[in-house]
Image (cartoon, rainbow, N blue to C red; front, side, top):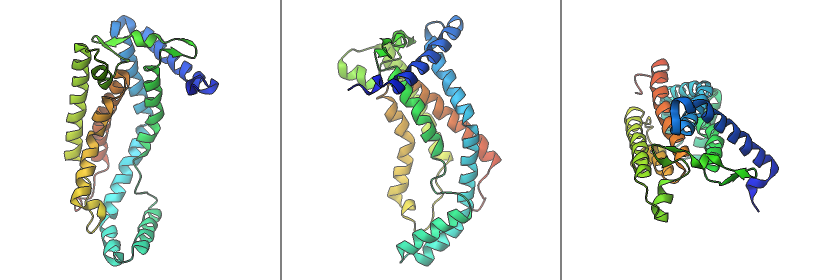
Length: 249
């Protein structure tokens, strides 16, 4: 059974296909053969603009968590021998401050459907029963429907694809390294989340997007690249607007 042939899903994909091809047609006089790639970038910018209020909430939540760090340390020292009490007191503190230890995950969750739709649009040869013209588009000679892993595993080597993917992955790695250095997590004494192993794992997560990008079509990889750059710039601006307490930073 083809889940993408299910009428509601097919209708959503067809609508997204219409929007993307329509934008590509509008951008064609300026972007030429890269019109579809330009349309993906434009959609990314629109989505990120709509998510600015969520980014502001995320920055406020980060500021609140930093302010609560001393209280969390005190709770952990007081109840470290009673895990149930420790968890209960910690969650109560977050509740009293109207925040959550998971605040900040919303932007990723909200963008997941967009990435999923882009992934599907540049993966299928047909959309809602008609040919998928998006697969004929490219960026500097690299097909928007080809993934780096797919190219390497099928043996259909393409130098443009390798170069374009290399540039995108390099950008994501640079952004990840800057993010890792600038936005280090605030350690909390006696917390499992502050152990050296956990901190190393959290640092490694910054590079997960670059790893994920090589498995998805180039169009989705382009979306991810623009997203991580936008996220870094936005976080740096909002950190100035909502600075962490000096004693914590």
